[in-house]
Structures are given as structure tokens and as C-alpha cells.
Amino acid sequence: MIRITLLSFLTILLLGNNTLDAQDSFLSDYKIKWQNASDYTLEFARSMPEDYYSFAATPEEMTFGEQLKHIAGNMIWLSSSYLGGAKEHVDPSACGDSKKEIIAMLEKSFAYAQKTISSLAEKNLSQEVDFIAGKMSKRRILFLMTDHVTHHRGQLVVYLRLKNVPPPKYVGW
Image 1 (tube, rainbow, N blue to C red):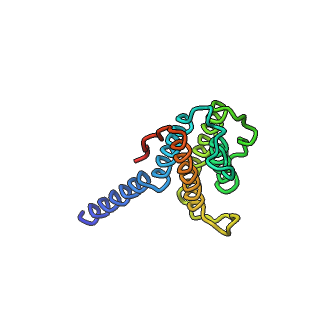
Image 2 (image 1 turned 45 degrees about the vertical axis):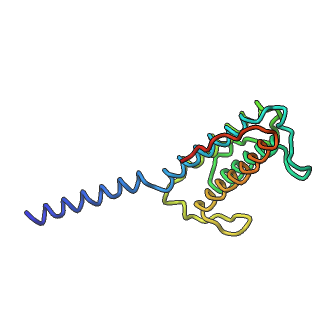
């Protein structure tokens, strides 16, 4: 009887642990973080007046609108080329230059990346892909995608400040 009770207890403990692991997985955390990055970046896009979408901090830099298109293009490229995203292609270079068009394209791009991320399986994140900088795990591609958005969003802070537009309050705790 003690043996059956002990086995039952261990079985429940192991099943409970698997459930907790599934709820507290890297991907579940990443999906939240990615949604926060999406919401925050879109706030930057909405904050800049349309007249300044063609503004560049220096002649060598991309304009504000080009920065947003670049962010979108990179997440689409990484999602489709390295994370197994569907080939339903969003082409930021074909997007118009108005604020409305760029925001719509950016929303579509973030949704595409989110859909791709949602299709990933935790067990496959260690799978390596042939990236331009060498072999890289899918997990590292996710980090790269987040870092890229953060990098360019940081540049957008400067653009907003140079035009006396207060940047959005931080979102994403």
C-alpha cells in the first residue's frame, strides 16, 4: 500500500512539474516580450507627426519612415528564412511612404512574426540554421530579432527628440 501511494505521489509530482514547465517556458515568455516590443514600437510610429517621417538625423542615416520599414523587413526576413515562417510575404520596400501606410505595414509585419513565433515548438529552439554569420540556433535568431528591433527603436528615440516629440513611456515590464 505504501509503495502504491508513493508511486502515485511521484507520478502526480512529475506530471505537475511538466505542467509548470510548459507554463513557464522560454517561448511563453518570449511571446509576451515580443508583443510588448510590437506595442512599444508601434507607439513610436504613431508618435511621430507625418511631416517628419521623411526626417533623417544625418544625411547618412535612414529617415524615420525608412527605419520603420527596415525594422519590418528584418523581422520578416528572419521569420521566413530562419524560423520557418509561411511564405505569405509582406514587402516593406513596396510600402508607400505615408505614416498610415507604414504603420499598417509595420502592424502586418509584427503580426506575421508573432504568427511565426507561435508556430515554433520549444523542443526545436536548439535546432541550428545556416545564418549568414554561421550556424545559429533558432533561439538565438529570436534574440537577434528582438535586439534588432530594440536597436532601431533606440535610434527612433533620437529622431523624436530632435523634433521635440516626447518618446512614448516605456512599455514591456
